[in-house]
Length: 623
Image (cartoon, rainbow, N blue to C red):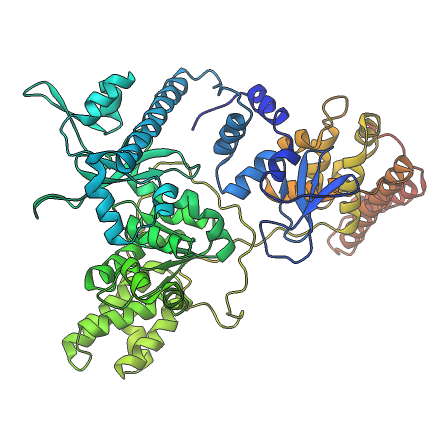
C-alpha cells in the first residue's frame, strides 16, 4: 500500500472542504451553523446527518456514523483510507507524493501510464463500434441481442477490428510504447518472428472498470469464428487488474447495492447490462471466474446479503454451488435466484419483462435450501446410495460454515426431506470433519465500514438460515453521562482551558477507557492544533472513540460558563473516584486475616481520602 506523508495528507485535507465533498453527493440544508441531510448510511425520514463546516467533520445522530472528510469518502464509496486520500487528491488536482518510497513512486508511475493507455484504447474501440465499417458486425450483434444505444454508451462498449496489428499500429501512432502495451495485455510479442500482434481481434469489447470507474482491463466476446475459438478473451493480470478481485459494473452498481441492501451476482457482462437496462441496477458479475473470497470481502464492505442469479441450466446451478465455498468466510448471507431454464437473466428479461425478473429475485431461496433441492434432484432419496450422497453433500457444505445453529437447522430440514430421524442426520453430520481453513492470501484486509443492516425478517429467536458467517463482535459499552459531558466540554475548550484540564484532571479518575483515551488525546493538543480533525488523527482507527468525538463536536449549542462547568465536572469526577477508593478500602477492612498494622494504615488512608473530598479542587501533585 502506498505510504503518504502526513504533510501530504494534511494538504489534501485542507484542499477538500467537507461541505463541498459531502454536498457533491447529498443535498445539504443549512441548520444554524451546521448543515443537515438525510443520512446516506441508513434509512431515515427526517435528516439526522450533520456536517460542521467550522470543525470539518460529519456525524449522524441516527446511526452514529461520523468522522472527517476522508472517513466520509471511505464510508460513502466503501473504499480504504488510501483510496480516499487518492480520490480527494485527484479531485483537488494535487499530485500524489509518497513518503521516502521510491518503489511506490515507480509503481504509481507505471499504473498512471497504464490507466492512460486503457482509457485511450477504450475510446478507440468505442469509435470503431460507432463509426467504422470494421464495427458493423458488432453493431448487428448488439441489435440482435437487444442492447440499447443508451447501454452501449453507459458501459462504453466497443469493437476491436478483425486485424492482427490494428492496436499495434494505433499505439505506435499515439506514442504508446510497445512494452507498455504488452504489460497492459493489449498486444503480444512473438519471439520467433520478433513481431507484435493484437490480443483482441474481431471481438465485441467490454471495458472492465475499478470502483472509481477507471478502465483497467477488457473482456472481448467473439463475433465470428469456429467452435475452437474462445468465446471470451479477457485481459491477463496486470499491475491494474487481478480478475479474482474485480467485479464487472461495481462502479455503476454500488449506490444501488447500498440502497437495495443486497447485491445480485450474474454470470456475464451481457446479463449484467440487461439487468441495468431493465432498472435492476444493484447487479454485478465476476470477471471470468467463480465468485472468490476477495469478491466476498469487497461486497461485504457494501452489504451483508448476496443473491446469486446464474443461468437456469445445470452449468448455472454448478456455478452457484462453486461460489459458496469462498464466500463463507466473508460473512455474507447467500441466496440463490433460479431463472427458469433454458433462459439466462438477459433472455428472461427480454422474454418476460423486468417485473417478472424482479419476482424471480424476490423468490430467491437461501443457499442451503437451494443446495438441498439440488442434491435431491441429482440423487434418488429412495435409495441408500442416494441418501448417503445427499447427507455427505449437505454435511460437507454445512461444516464449512462452522455455525452450529445453521448445521442443526439443516439437519432438521434434511431429515424431513429424507424421512429419517433428526438424531440420525445429526450423527452423520458430526462424522464429517470440518475442512481446514483456507490459507488467506497475504494482502491488506479492508474493514467493512457500514451501518447495521436493515431488518431481514428474522427475530432473535429465529436465526436467518441463509446467514453463513460468524457472530459480530460485541459493541463497546457507551460511557456514562458525566463522561459524555466531559467529551463535549473538551471539544469546545480552547488551549488555555485544556492546559488547566491537564493540571487538574487525573486520567485515573475516569473509569471508561475510551473517555480516558479521548481525554489524554485532547489535552495533548493544548498549545498546538486544536482542530477536531487533528483530534481524530490522534485517535487513529478507533472507530468508537472517533464516533463519540464527532457526536460531541456536532453539538451546536455553545456551552455557557464553560470554565466553571468544566471545573465542577472535574471535581465531581474526582469525588466519585474517591468514593470508589473508600469502598475498596472498606472491603479490605472486612478481611479477618488483615494484620493490625495494615488495618491501621487502611483506616488512616480512608480518613485522608474523606479529608481530600472536603477540599476544593487543586492542581495535581505532579503538575
